[in-house]
Amino acid sequence: MIPTLEDVVRITGLCVDSQAVTGVTYTSYQELAERLLGLAVTREKSSLIPRTGLQASLGVASTRHETGESQADYMTRMTEDARAVLAEEEGAAADRDLRRFLILVIGKLILGTRGDPVSYRCLPLLEDLSNVGSYAWGAALLAHLFDSLGTSSRVTGVAGFFPLLQVWVYHHLPSLGRGEPRWARAVPLLRRWRFRRDEQSLRRQVTMIHDALDSVSFGHVQWTPYVGEDDAAQPWVERGRPYFGRDIWLHSFNTVVPLHHRLVARTLGLHQSVVEFPT
Image (cartoon, rainbow, N blue to C red):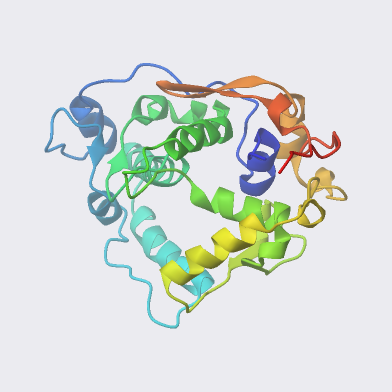
């Protein structure tokens, strides 16, 4: 079992049916960053920028999640702070702020990096803002995640958009009981769930998840969790459907990885018999 393009589309609502996220990458983004974002680059040969600098430019640097505050209230408060700053801008300044916001979302969430810095790699694709929506950001997200999951076991952190994996597990392995339903019919599916808080130590949680995964039976796996979904309310699903169930190359700039659907036959509803191995 692996996440597929259908999982990405249904969970995140991001497109997979548009232009590949690829193009020229640079050893230095200094000129582009200063011209398109109005931000100084202190490390000339780096493609990364401190996250706090971006947040400060959007007026949300000092916004912290307060104790006891719900995620919804936190996001509402942060959105109001950002709007108060952005409402004062117009013309070229508004375009600059939109690029800053997109760099933060794409470079820290969709194509997330390890640690605090945010990647500049997508900046050339943001020069023409009218064209940003024509890229297959969902396919790039999956390519980046697959590439990051192949990291050496000696590296303590991996990159990528992990809420995709979390919600994917909620739908495909419900017996693990890791998520709590919030809004039954909300779309994309990411909006339906609240992460379940666990007060046990991280080591204990990981041990319990390992044990649960080792004991999951075939009957407890939901191989086709999207049967009965109202696809009419999800136009992004209809647009991406021609790409579901196909072997395809996934692009994320210099990373190109194959998605082999032949290896996930059960996820596609092709339920072959269980292979019995001699003990």
